[in-house]
Length: 230
Image (cartoon, rainbow, N blue to C red; front, side, top):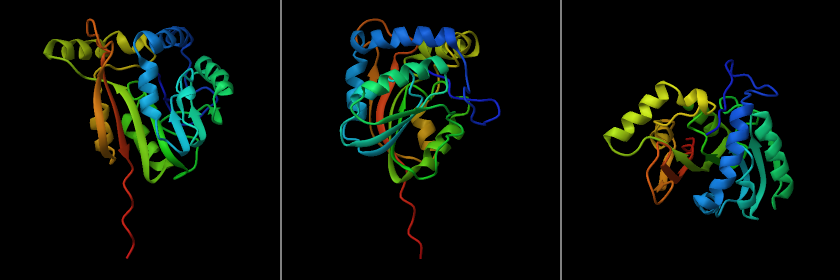
């Protein structure tokens, strides 16, 4: 649940600044690794990746410990200064090379077709312009490149979806650094032109009462191969 946007679309040293939310997120996310089993989901999210990987919205860098040794390099984009500093500290402990840089999802500061895979982990909920952000992901991926995603969004019955949408229109984005509860990440990936692969629903927490943030999806998509020229 991290905001990756700037009003102008230009990349600056600190595209966003949410110090209170960043401190809260850093504490809550670390506890969720074991209490909610998120560490195991990160392991499955990243298993089998190789080559150059771009991670959009690295937050405090909790994915870094789970990248397999087959990954040659991770370029981790994080706009929020406090979270980026924590990500830098996590990068020093990673078993693969990780370069943490500032940037916005809607204007990634990297070359086109430079990466074998992209990782989206609890970030599409908070980008300001989802189609533009996914267009950037498609731009920086090589044809055939993978998108690994672990995202939360719209889910549950009629009462829960009404609650999610009501919170999105009122206090939730202000309190949580721009997070939205009722987005539909899989549909957004399809609309952006990605080919969808295997996906599985995940409920967090797995046991106990469902929360507006509980409805997650773990999956894979691809940038289609470009048609051969004739």
